[in-house]
Image (cartoon, rainbow, N blue to C red; front, side, top):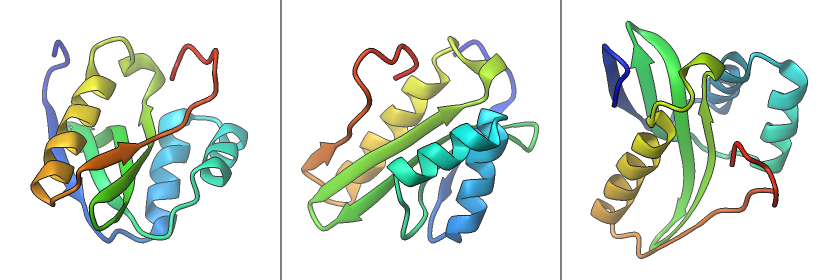
Length: 116
């Protein structure tokens, strides 16, 4: 990864409102954040948060039900994209989910969306 001073921290049982606020910050567009929050409704907040000097720059959230997890959304701040941060978030999510006994991970994204 080429980004400097990026750290990761697990997000566990965070209030949904907190995660929605992070998504809104990362997307910088309230309408898009609302659309994403409707597409991936959250009932709990488990995931991985990327921070650069204590500022959120990326987020990967999932829902888990025993050995099955649903991954999404994965959001990266616009000026931090194309540096491998999203890939790193998904990789860290995969490692965490495997350690929790998850055997299947599912996700859906719109066809033809280059950001996905």
